[in-house]
Image 1 (cartoon, rainbow, N blue to C red):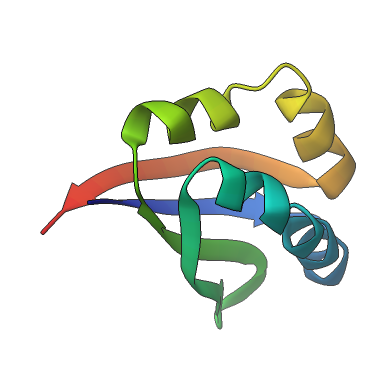
Image 2: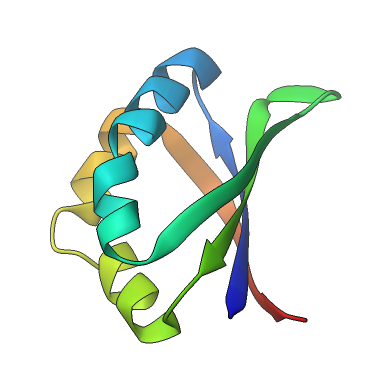
Length: 88
């Protein structure tokens, strides 16, 4: 089992969170299970989330999906992106 830790900026956290939550079925189908979604208390425009990942290749394919950039742009995702794969 792997873990994926992601941190990135968002223009509007509430808008981003509603779209993030709506994408749950796609993440589940890719074997990605949300463990935590957090906000940086010093900067409300920073989202941090941790997934437990069944299969890294499936998760990476999901993150590279053809409409991924359009979805991120619509959600207000902003660089920089910190993405870290972790294992126990």
